[in-house]
Image 1 (cartoon, helix red, strand yellow):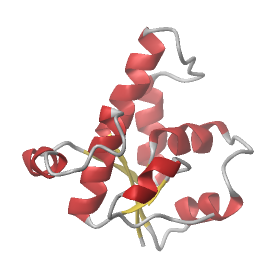
Image 2: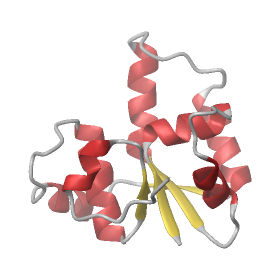
Image 3: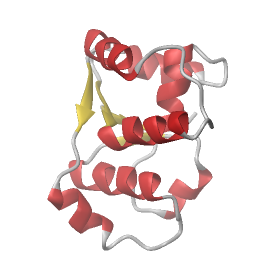
Length: 128
């Protein structure tokens, strides 16, 4: 399975947060699965930290190193992702989430998210 983690799922995973369903944790850690996070998620985290809306225990560089050690790829934003974004209906207004949805669609990735708004889109979702 090819997974794309939503920002909050990434944070839950990094913090070993009990809100992360066990089945998601096992799927992320299953070496048979390909796991990625969007660079948009790291950008969103950086913005929230700079606004004082989020506090990180580790630096972004440390998070990058952890992702590398865990075999979690960082998916760049490509022009093709942005072109796909232009075709998305506005069920969801969050620009980061819309980009993550567009990436998941185009790259044929299964999204791991607790965001109920994602169900309105034609995208594969990992269920709890």
